[in-house]
Length: 516
Image (spheres, rainbow, N blue to C red):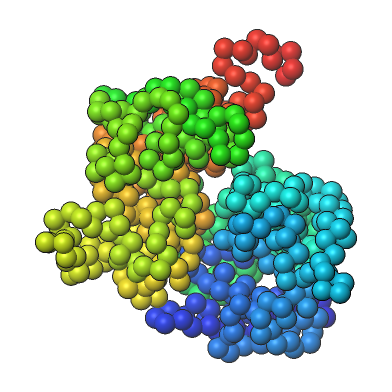
């Protein structure tokens, strides 16, 4: 018994219309990396929120080092040495990195913050674990990868021994994922125990010792990673075999749908432009992928393309029509669908219902309104169809508040809304971020079907497997410029990586040949 640092026994947690956890038992050994795998909405985050004190279980018990404990809130969890990096970070955007790390664990003397000592401890921890951060930077000015480092440093600052990572790689680049895996291995060697929630089977196979699988709120079993396979884990998770490759038939591309010429976007962070003189075309019947490490201008480019940010130079044409100065709604009406990078900031109104979110891009159409009044029955009928078609799981169906849904199901709702509009151009930014293998397989098929119906798709992805599987053409963006164009059939992940890291640029290969 004492072998387990944490035991969650027979945990049950119910929300209106859904049993999120149904009699789940989970055992964590000291010094192990224990993965928690399951579909979107399987109850993984709920179970970890119970352990961290964010939720109280309806029944069941938690034991720490063999002793029963009562975790009423996150402060109790921290006192027991339990820390958590949340899927959607719990950071104050207008505070500095340092202020966020010490928030709630401030060291004071005579009512005054002892920031010098706090800063020294943060710098010491960041150097020890390779988590480089600028303590004085504001959260709103740093990348999501950096924000995650801040969340990890928050745990380490509190000397936590049990570390919960909820979908930690959903927002990271391939390089950052490798770094995080190394950091997690280092923690385990030091005797820290890690609970690692993820959908990504490759990561589980690479870093975990054991894996517990949940399906629709129920415990399906625990396996030793050394004795299992990706295929076996996916079967346990979704209850069927899953295809890891994308079936795509060859089709002839048609006329130019999207044409961008000389697009330049100023940076909000520094004096240099975030996007510099970018030009390319996307034709009907093709998927063009904009690949690159996060922070190289893809976000700013998509914001300019969809009307969220102003360009300082350049033109954008859709089906030959100049839409450079169109508003966001006018671009949507002209035929642009957008699956945004940040589902909370730009994809959903979190306090609206699921059905209200499903018609956000078309509630003004005659099908959904008459004389300025929304046709509620039509909205309900439409939302129910999309929920069924895309398997969007929620406790109360169309009337579920979007905020209460799992991240993966929020993503599925956005993908359903944007693809169903049937526009000429689909801009899909990280469309499968945070989704399980079953959902990824389905979304990939939907994106390919958009392309097969002679529409144009601009895909922006950090997942190199996704880039290679889905794309017809790959454009690599580095420091705001297109540095290479590739055919996925003739290039390799290693070659793409060189261009993404800035080690190469087409037209300059000869200069780098002797570096290989």
